[in-house]
Length: 458
Figure 1 (tube, rainbow, N blue to C red):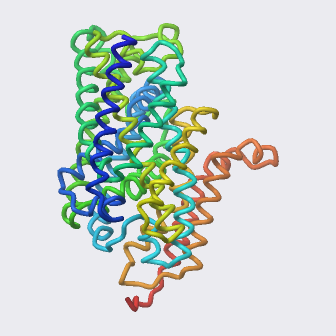
Figure 2: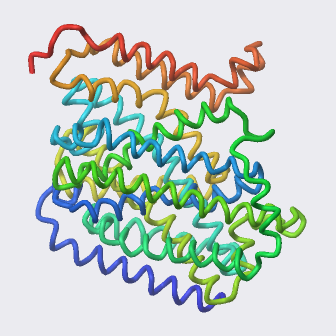
Figure 3: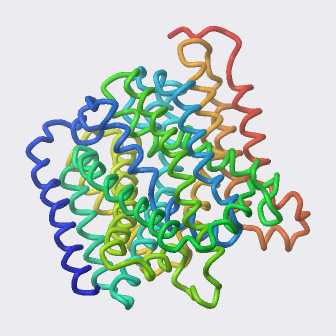
């Protein structure tokens, strides 16, 4: 499979590189480059939105989580689907109609320059970890496919992704997402069909063990993930970047609602794949390869190659979106410039920083993403949501609003990265394990207090 995989990978990347090169001519303005001209139809937005959310965490990560804790692993994606649907109800049209290009740009229009700057810094720093997480997953997939850890293939693949993203910008990302989504869905569908039809002797045992909660995942976990994960899908920068490229508010609403429904179905499929592996494969048999990697190892050659490229597509479709969004935010909202060249340079810098973190750092996809989300969600979700809902209706008290962001973000950082230190100074375990939720609660209260009763002058 090694030579076949490498040849197919090369062809695959060449296609995307050509799309990026061709889109250089179509990029006539900063709006074209950063938000795909703000003229995408509902269908295009649905395709690119689904490609963005079905990344490494929602494929490789979810199946491994399900193998460890059982069917409750579905909640990550189910809460994502709920977040998208809630977004379509409360936010999609409002956000699109503001005319903003990014979430920090939106915060600036609602609250002011300090809000724009602080949201920008949080997103850019956190999302380097998100990009690195996707690259870690890509390296694991390449290592499995070629049968050895090959840093050269990993680095070359990463550099090509960075290059085509820098060349074509958001226009290229939207186009490549459509191709990638088709490959993702085909690979996952074939995998589930083969496991449950060709290898379905143990299916009754699997279905008897479908439980939404168990000893490894209780009510407290459910509550935490609803806010931490659902919040990112409700108002995350990559999710909302798909809103900004829609041609109008109604298109944005339809896209979020449709994508939420499809994601709910996808969550069942990918979770059932994890369940098949959990109840058919012992830890000794699987070793270190991971749940989906094991599935690839027992599938027929053609199906295995399809699933490998489905997973690779999932990773790349999230990676390029994260890179272009973080880079656009850095240039537009931190530097306050609308420079295509500036964003291209930043794509390269952020991409290389994430590549270095993935290459030299430690951590798996779920830990890297959960860490980033645990900072972003408590610090940003409630203040931004309150600001959007109050926009042009009520004034926002800037000082309290900024305090809400800082308080939530600090508690998220403490809970994610300073557990041992807090335990060392005597912080009770019950508080330490819920610092993210505590931060969200404080952020929510302050966000509500930041909304003035007086009507806005806008």
